[in-house]
Length: 112
Image (cartoon, rainbow, N blue to C red; front, side, top):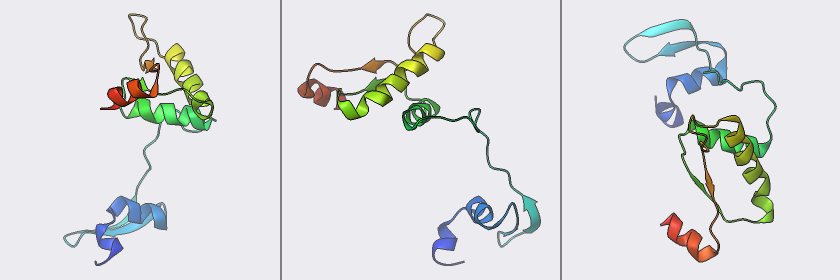
């Protein structure tokens, strides 16, 4: 294979074509291999964009969120608070604490 197909994982090629596909690795060909997409525990649940952002951060293992307050980010902060209320640690602490600096200079130091 050459071009984009050579760099695309086999699973990606199959998902684009159909639930059943023909996989050829050069060494072995599997016909009608059924590939299933991995399922998330929240699959099928209606979530806001902010809830999706926070869930992805949690799934990726983010332990602390740093953020500078402003109008556009407030729905995401609300989602962080909801997530922490639903997923308390055994000690009662937040699973993903939100740290908001007092000023932009403080945020710059935190990011470094």
